[in-house]
Amino acid sequence: MSRPGDTAGALEPHEERSPSYSNGSGRPGPARTASGAGRAETGAELVRLAREQVGVSKAILGELRGIREVLANAFAPATRAPSSQGQSAGRGKGGEVASDRDLDSAYGNPTVKTPRNWKGERFDGFKMSETSVEFLEFFADFKDWQADRREEEGGEDGSKKAGYCRKDAARARGWAERLRRGGARPASATTSQVVGGAPTGGGLDPS
Image (cartoon, rainbow, N blue to C red; front, side, top):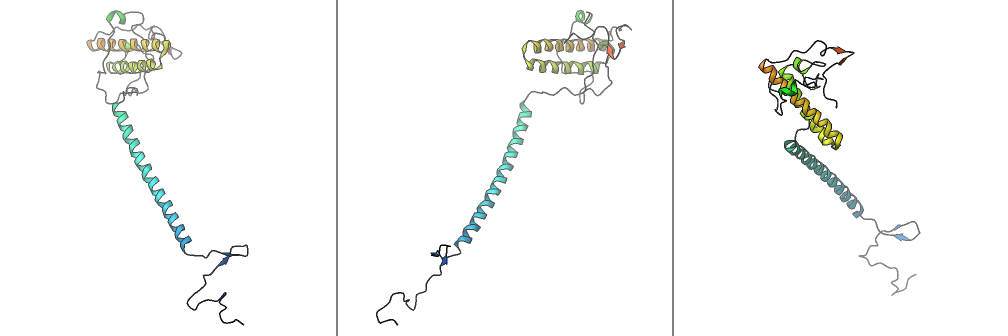
């Protein structure tokens, strides 16, 4: 029975004790509130916003890469082999033309191998004088392209191969000019024969 004046443990009529929960040690733990759920929702929202930001950044990066590729293709020198599509008949990009003395030499009328990009009649094993003006102009451009690639390789070997390609390009243009003038030299039957799938006689300079 409590005595007057003994107020230990008593509550005033207007006070309420906050609920407490055991934390597993037998001692009262902190009171639970709704703030934990609020923090979880805030964290989820931040994660969602971060993912959206990453998606936007990737889209922007993709657009920038596309712009860079467009600019690179616009200002970079051509590195692909020439194509016969869209080429004017009998007129290539131009370049050195072999002299008549060179064309009449032992290596001046070599046999050719048709480039894969050529869409017209194939002339594998034929001599230059036995082909067409259109083919020779395309073949000359192709050989110049090959020469550029060999020079990019560098070294003595690359320079040597590039020189052979330039000579073939010049001879192809020389024979194209002769064919335009109607002055092609008829090839002999023995030098234009193909034995075992390989042309014989008067071939390209060794490369």
